[in-house]
Length: 67
Figure 1 (cartoon, rainbow, N blue to C red):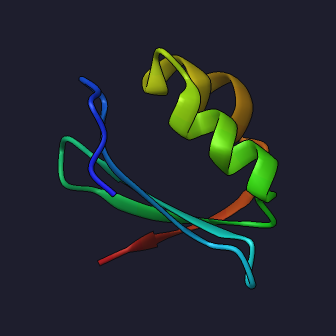
Figure 2 (cartoon, rainbow, N blue to C red; figure 1 turned 120 degrees about the horizontal axis):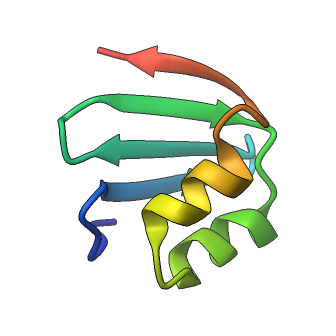
């Protein structure tokens, strides 16, 4: 899902696998594991997606960079 942000282009979520995929405006894509549906919704609702990502997701979940 495309979002209105200067840092994040898109946020996608797989609730069964608790996997959050973040696409940044740079084009880099990452998948974060173990992210709850509540965190995903809070990310979508955040006024600043970049600040929310830095404070609540980055360095808190296992991740992999996608090609």
